Picture (tube, rainbow, N blue to C red):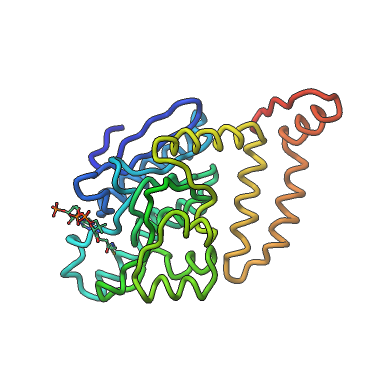
Length: 260
Ligand code: COA
């Protein structure tokens, strides 16, 4: 499928989705959110795709936020709809995606950009990356999950400070805050992300998917994550991957997971 605002590349079962509006620092307008949703939806059902990497086009930005020019004259009702639609179509969709999603932050990740990276299952950043939630400097608050996911990742005090000051942190500080897992040079960023994807793909992706659901359950209101874990754990015993993984171990050979 051809898109106007994003580009896709599939190689070795890794789908790299690039938000590609570099002249606007990859700002997320509605169309870009829709295109990302569609690309992810087809990736969900595409057996060729096992891991997704999200990154930004150009050398300057991952995503510099929601497109400010698009919502500058919105009413409260339209603002609420923008937030709810975006959360449903993209941010929660990424967080609950059944295949691993890695954010490769290659520059500015601000506002909706950082929120998108935080919705991914984990993040790596290039040395030049800068991250922040500057919404209060525009008279609005983060609306794509930032008030919830930033405290989960960095702790309440740091999140409050970042949100209230609207300031940016650099990649090293993001690493110190546990906001990103690794910092590498911009040149090495995608190779490094692919290397991590390769390590994941050696494992049972059926089990990886169950692990995503169990970890996410910890962050869902009214859901007992331990119970979800017990159920997912039990369910694993009925999969072909489990039979293959355990028999390979016991027979001292490398597992070749059927992915079922
Ligand atoms: N929405 C819409 N357009 C954006 C944007 C956003 N979030 N971020 C950047 N752009 C556009 C700029 O308007 C500019 O477009 P123009 O060339 O047509 O004027 C272009 O991208 C380049 O940005 P510019 O500001 O000239 O680059 P810079 O290097 O001077 O500054 C930033 C980079 C990231 C510091 C600055 O663009 C910025 O503060 N962006 C907004 C960040 C933000 O508040 N995001 C949260 C939104 S809720």
